[in-house]
Image (cartoon, rainbow, N blue to C red):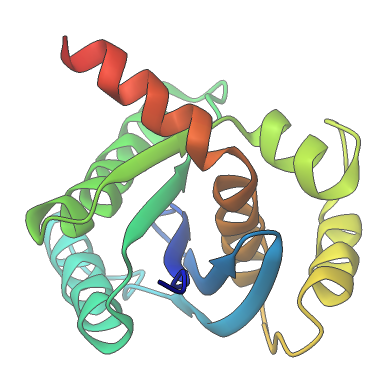
Length: 171
């Protein structure tokens, strides 16, 4: 029986811009599928922005039917109000795939950078460059979409360990 590719949705959460990227992985082979950026209306109320984010991510899930999703963990900044709002957006980003039965894994930003660039303190430009090397067909227009693809690639590389941790935690 031939193995089939696993479709992974990578997500880089944000309230102003949430990047998403979809790849297929079969063994060590990575194939670009699609990517984009969700940009809720900045002048709308918080609840409206979160609802917009949910609706747009639901469209991505319907269009690309991922088997698994991966989300970058939140970077905590100095402004508590901004951190709280980002956490709310991240909650929507994690909830949306979970609501349709897609398992969600989380990865620290340092691990994502180390996995795709080789250094945990890599800059945005380095991530964009490596995404073009690893996924030459990728047509991302924003750093957020490139970051989301990097999260998907990280999940492709670490998904076996993530699954083992989930099984152990479920016991």
